[in-house]
View (cartoon, rainbow, N blue to C red):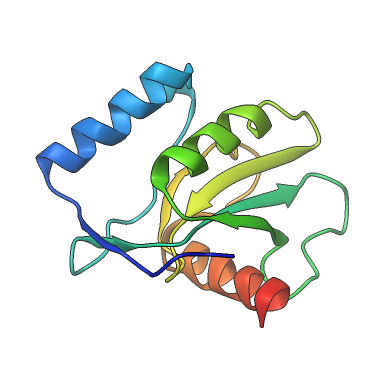
Length: 131
């Protein structure tokens, strides 16, 4: 069961912490992408592991082909799950916050995670899974 939502200010220290978490768990940042930073500079927990299937026709699900796999309460948990999933050959993976802001993703053949559409797609994927 998820814990309470926590707002995290995205400042230089937060960016450094995220990079350190990824480095500690072996995520190679140079091969991945980041999303749009929230206007209020805060990510809101819980965090969601989202994937985009690379199978033909998978983009017709109302969320740009994105599917919410599960949620976690901390960015470290999300990063660890992302590391385990991100090299899956049939899917692209990403991490987003509770408002759909994409923190990190590895998609190369889809724009489903990108820009404002990526935020909308993530929110729709979360809604489809959790209501």
